[in-house]
Image (cartoon, rainbow, N blue to C red; front, side, top):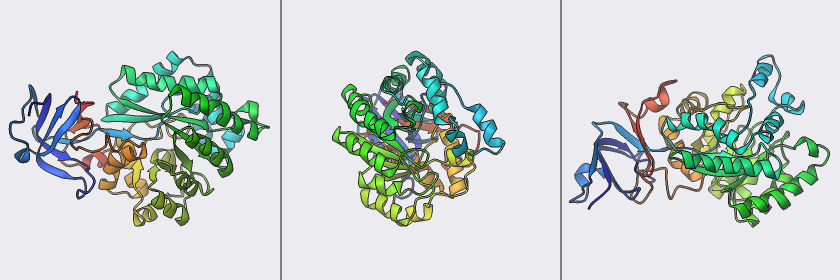
Length: 402
């Protein structure tokens, strides 16, 4: 079989469903043609006649699937370093938000930024992720809170995929916060999201999913249900910022709408976990925000394990609560703060993160037929990717076989 490129003499962590642990293959080989994996497994079991003009000798290095950051707010204007100082002085996230800071301060800066400005400011953040082996990234809007800026954010996110070799999945987060001009008209803003913004975004085809912030300082479960009903009517997947600061039963709400994922989950209870399990919704844990906000109420990891809810991990890269551009550090934080195992962490940024984006058929594992997204590592064992802090052992990254 003639291929475009072969990587040989490698150790593989395939992450394939049904395999034990990480799906480790010693003496492994990966062959790609037209950007797709045609074989991933032991070199001794490769099809006869497998050949390519470009053969990469990995010299025993480890290969994992390209990493997937399934929850980011990468595109925005301005920064919120001053709010970090306020929190260090004792102010809470909720206090800052209720005083007009928080999300609304980023909204002001984002509304003032051009599409080009948004791309330019986002590129260094994206490049930091790519340098750690990320090949698929989700980017949310939610810093416009009116149609023009929400569209500009989503288009800027799509632009990033035109200037870098990466897959960008975009999510419309109009229900992120109540803009100042609608402070006295919650129903009016929810109606704007559902009747004007969401239909226009669906027509433009610039969003793959719809998200919402279900929280006391965000939107109520009833308001989110209204948004999700409109989203599903428009043919879009949904996902939810759920139960981060309090238990409004957001996990159960996400499950009711068969959400791709429910994210944060620090205050989710047993009913919420069983609902996620029944719906097949992925739990996305965001340890960067937990760390940065100095939270103490941990997500119910033991319950998630007991009911076999898939667990993904993401950076939650955003200017206010998780200015984190390291997927490797996100894994370390998940292990040290939430006591996730090495296997859970690595599956959480590959197979399960792909599932959280509805992309498990395309990325997240090393299997024939999937896009050839690879991260090649100078490590002795996979645990090093979770164990180290502030160290990047990436040797090479491939996206679509290149």
